[in-house]
Length: 180
Image 1 (cartoon, helix red, strand yellow):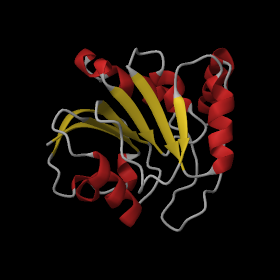
Image 2 (tube, rainbow, N blue to C red):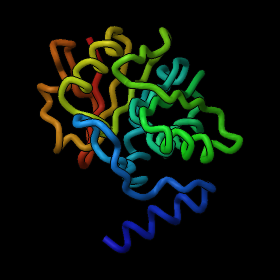
Image 3 (cartoon, rainbow, N blue to C red):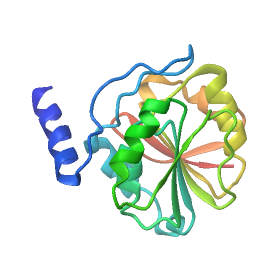
Image 4 (cartoon, helix red, strand yellow):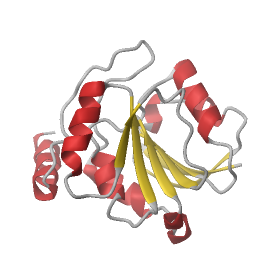
């Protein structure tokens, strides 16, 4: 565990961000902030087809912006992070630096992704009715790719909700799906 922690911090230092750590997030169905490990994030994002880069990338529950930082290097037309916790929003903004992404401090249940969204990312930010509402509001397009980290904590049926997920790629503790 010490080696993984050292790798996580070293990657943050190289990119000039501070995204490691653990932080409680208010709300019974919100999971605490704990970033997706760089070692899982990179292969996960590499599974995104080149055709998806023409659309927007949306991270629901973006925390301190680790995923936004990585996605900003891939050439999406727009990279957006949505976060309910004001303190985490400030951290994500601080970590942006000169990178091209935006942070929306909002409830994921009330957020609707841009019409051209091609990738929706969730790093296990919430469960229950929050997850269901966020998925129903944002997984309506058959061209959408859903990337989900921490698949061991969430039942696939909880993600599917009748929206027709087809797994296209997976790794240790993550999976990518097409929607529709």
